[in-house]
Length: 356
Figure 1 (tube, rainbow, N blue to C red):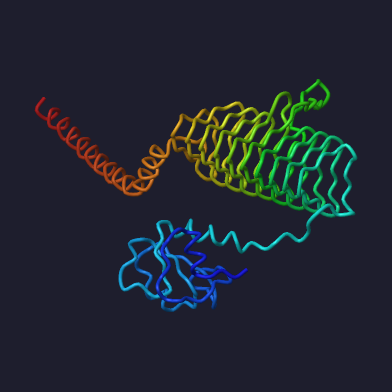
Figure 2: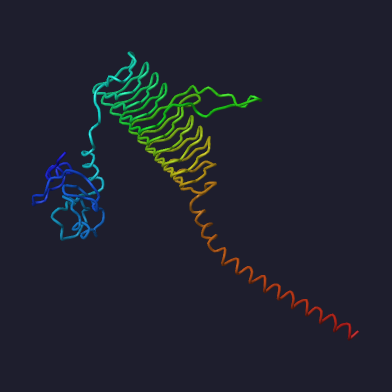
């Protein structure tokens, strides 16, 4: 794709520069840009970096100072503007239409302009909305529903009864609707508890690669609208994620825990079962959460506690060597005083014996 400077300005609703600038044929970082690339900067001290770059066009913030290089356009939010244009340069899909090597049950219902890649399997009762893309070797189990304009990348597995809302993106290797980890001890071994529930992924969610979202034992495991989940995340049976939650790589949530709207769960954080994490809570990296977290609270550490408390304790730990030296000094003083006191007591005792 090639875009003129005038077209980019039109899309961003800004006034184009008076100079005629080269067309844009790609996007890149400022340091890696080659001829024809669009870039952006977010700070006002980038004149030298822009001068050294081969970028055709640079988006800069409104406070970018004079003199303005001829290839710079000031926009209200350069990062957002850049990625709005960058999205136009995404490569087209490798396939379109319904591939002959896909296995589609006759009872499956496909909307308009659906793409089904080779090796995909759509079981009985599957429904796929308009404009959705089902990638290579994707499995959609019985009665699965996929909304409109979704993209399920290669090797995604979606088990029976799962519902995926509109405009969701599921990356390669992710499993949705597999059995939850439920067992009962019967006196001689671990007996499996039937997992009879389902999973609902609401609209505008994105799940990274190798994510596991387990079906509910009974009822629903739910991922709320607009939630974004990084790679290698575990969501156990009957978990409920609120809207617009962020989960970073290798984090995990045990069964039946509730996560509020707008929560952020950092990398490798682990949240125990049957807890309530309030709206807007922030869970630090590698935190081990074993108790409920109040709305708006930031916690970290294991066991997870308020960040402010942990920071105070860490600051105190940093002072321990100095405190230890002071304690040892005080001990030496006490020992010296005790020795002196003993000596004085001895002298007083001897004096009383002589006078007696």
